Image (cartoon, rainbow, N blue to C red):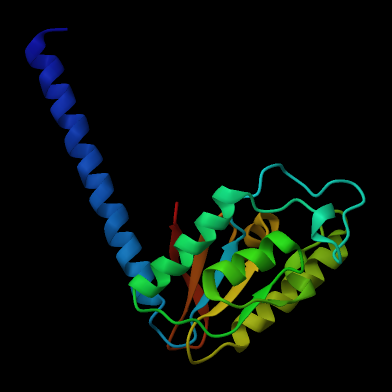
Length: 191
């Protein structure tokens, strides 16, 4: 490959990266704007917690038996809250899976989190899983005005609600339209 062709290729790749970065920034701006609309809903996967599942024998009443946020996850949760404040967004009610990693994410990010069992999900019982997702969808539909409702949950629940696989600490924003229906405005990841 000649130097000229190599330089042209690099210039093209740099230009494509800049365009992609600008598109992501515009998408992020649109998502932040959607959070200012009355009745918006945030579905947030808990911040970083090493591992994949709770250890065998984990109990809801004892955080020491569960998979928990590490220092990175706690810092990430704080950054999520800072990003909301930087964008002038005050949240309303924060509901959370009763798992400690979710409650901690909500409390560190927003200063509050109330446990709500449906947000825990149900991996091994498909009928229960459908019922819980239906309950969550009803709560989203019922949120019609005021500041964003925040739901802190697990990746499987986000996937069931939004059809998206999200990273730990990533959130999906639902905007309430004029017709009263919530649709996905986009997603944000705060590192």
